[in-house]
Amino acid sequence: MSKEAKVGLFVLSSFAVLTFTVIYLLHAQFGGSTVPYRTYLRYAGGLQPGAAVLYGGINAGSVTAVRPWAQDPTQIEILLEVKDGTPLNEKSVAKLGLVSIMNSAALSITTGSNEARRLPPGSTIPSKESISLDEIAGKMAAVADSANALITQAQGELGDISGGVHHLLANLDEISGPPTQKKVQGILNNIDQLIAEERPKIERITDQLATVSQHADDTIQNVNGTVKDLHDPVLKDLADLQNAIKQADGLLQSMQVMVRSNDSKIGDTVDNLREATDNLNQFTNSLKQRPWSLVRIKQPGDRKVPK
Image (cartoon, rainbow, N blue to C red):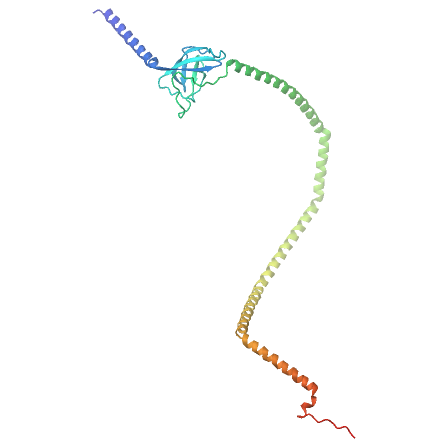
């Protein structure tokens, strides 16, 4: 076999392998079973058939049709197919998105919730409207208009502030001019002279205050010594007084015990004293009536009447 034939055979073999690889990759990417779904938006934003369908940012299928909805022409019906096994659920939301800034529009679907029920094939995916470029441009224009008005207002206020600042600077220049500086210098000179004249008096008052403070310290020390000298005797007298109070308390308790133990005897003694008092009263009354009984035993007879 010639060299040219070998080269041609090698080229054909390489081309065949490349073709097989491309077909295999395309089949792996786009082959397999798909599941149809649909969703509805009011603004499709250039979405076209064949656009990518992203599930949580992952390429999961493609858009098959984009058309006005027959039942409500104000909404755009979007038909799509996703790979079988894509876990679309009732919490998943479809909205207009982009694969990247440089790519065309794509349909983006959120992952939803793991607890939500899975959507059966052919069902409608809930949707959410995205802000269009026209709306963004309109809002930016409104912001720009507001910014222009704000800048104009700020320029006017800055002009007023600038005039006030110039007026303030002029007043400061007038206040800080040579006449004011001379007055301030005169005031400072008077203060220096007053301090120089009053310094001896201030020093004398300071010395007197120091002397008074020293006398106060001596007085306080003397008072402390006196209190210390009286402290021990006072404590001793208080201790003696406390002991005397304890002894008196003990004596009172003893007297109470003695009175309680002799309560019946004291009652008898009081009764005897009462009886003796009664007898003494009777004897006293008898003496008042018959004082002669102290001298005679018998009462003298009655005196006879003389004839």
